[in-house]
Image 1: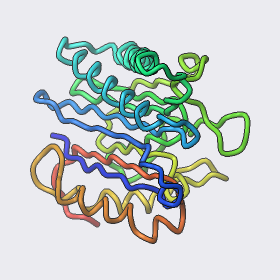
Image 2: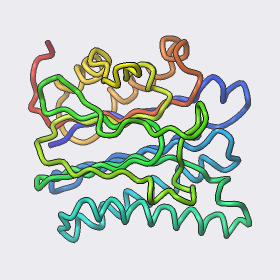
Image 3: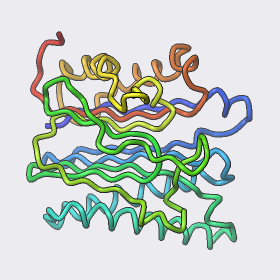
Length: 254
């Protein structure tokens, strides 16, 4: 069964600007052993971005769970539908509040993993990283960049559905991580477009020896402390969010 930790921390730039944390995340292990997870990063320039991220995550998780309840295994379609519905819900929220949709701008990352396969989805930056149990992590999609420096694409963009990336997993996935772009400098080598394996080895090690299934609360609290630490703040002033999950059997860390 899957075990996971999930945590986030507000960026120092948000604290200085008296802004809320604009990231949102959710992860659940279902009764059949499936895992669904979603993470969204609201645009710092959008006034209602945290609500856009909230709607994106909650709608995506709800649709993925509903699809799995119906025993669906068409993961490409299921993920695309989830993103489309999330966009529609954001548009409806904007309409109810008489606001422009762009004020709810948010990225979206999502995964669904079942005993029968799974897949991943992304629009915008941030990164999803997977492993087959060999301690060699690889990214699923390279973070999407916009036309200008430090810009990306959002679920609320007019062409968002065309920019949506989906991959169905053909092999065994034992470990997975989703993170917002604030952690990219620690997790990725930009020049070589590679994953920084030591970062993930350190993050996953405590989870590999944890007991039980579902969310490991004590480790999630410890992860939140780490994300709020000076070590992270010295590398990024953005909000940071991270979901880490494994279904490997308990083993001794190396």
